[in-house]
Length: 209
Image (cartoon, rainbow, N blue to C red):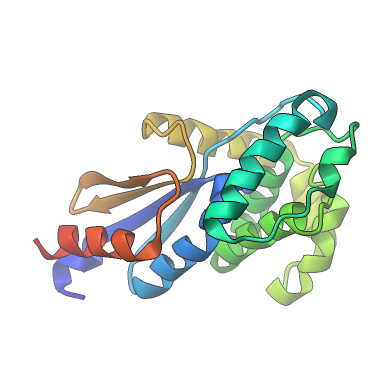
C-alpha cells in the first residue's frame, strides 16, 4: 500500500440479522483480509429495529429471502426458527450486542458480528435474549457479567441508535453496503451482495488512481 492508501477507511454498513449481510459475510471477510493494513469500520444499519412482528406475521416473506440468499451465496441456513410463530423479529438486540462488543473489545467487533449471524441463521438462537451471547465471550476475553450489564444499559440502547443514525446520514438504506473514505472523499463501492474480487478491484482502483 502506498502512503495515500493509509488515509483510506473501509466502511461496512450491515446488520447481523440481515440475510444478505449473512450471505455477504465470506466476501466481506476476504475484502477485510486483503486490505488488512487499512482501517475497517463497522456501522450497524438497523434493518428492523424495535420491530414487533413475529414469524407468524413475516415468516413466509423471510423464507423467500433466505432461500434466495442461500442459492446465491451457498451460506448454510437453518429454517426451523421460522416455525416458531412467537419469535419476534427485532433486529435491535443483536445490533446492540455488537455495539457492546465494540465497547468491551474493539478488535473483536467484526468477528463477533459474524458469530451473531451464525447464532441466528445456523443455530436459530433467540437473538433477543442476551444469554445466548455469553458462551461466545471467553474467547474474546470479555467478562459475561460486564457484557450483560452493558447490554441492558441505557448507554448501549442509545449508542446503537447512533449507528442507525450514522447509516442514514451516509444515505444507506439497504444492506449490505460498502463505502470508501479516501482522502476525505466518500465512494460507494457496492450496495447489496457482491463478490470479493470485483470489490477488491474497485477499492484498489480508487486508492491507486
